[in-house]
Image (cartoon, rainbow, N blue to C red; front, side):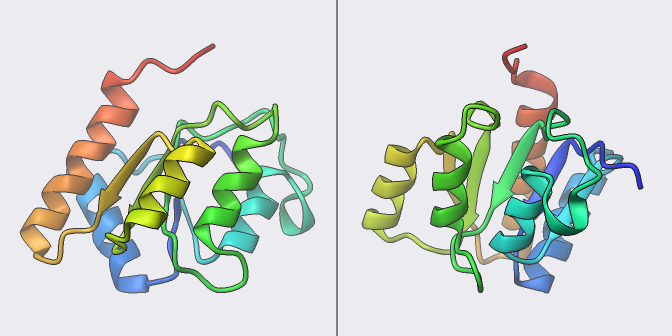
Length: 145
């Protein structure tokens, strides 16, 4: 299987994941997109473990869109593990969540989140926000080499 992924979406809510993918598709940003349903699977993918052990860990995504409230391993735990590992700490992580809780926002930035975006409730606004996120991180942002 080809594991070259540019956008990794980690989201347990299927309708939010589908809306995110649809918004990215509008800007032709879904060529190398992978959606995973929980934090445990995301960590396995990123660190090339379990079902993804044949993947090269060096093939890092250009951006990770990460939800916070998920089963098994939550987004804050995923973020903590990513940012504390030399091999993965430079991957841009955008928290895309429904949580407006200040402690969540504070903790995510303290752990190294690159951005914190609260999911808009209105469909049109959700699509606009995700489209702009995709364009920024895939086209405008200059990642380290």
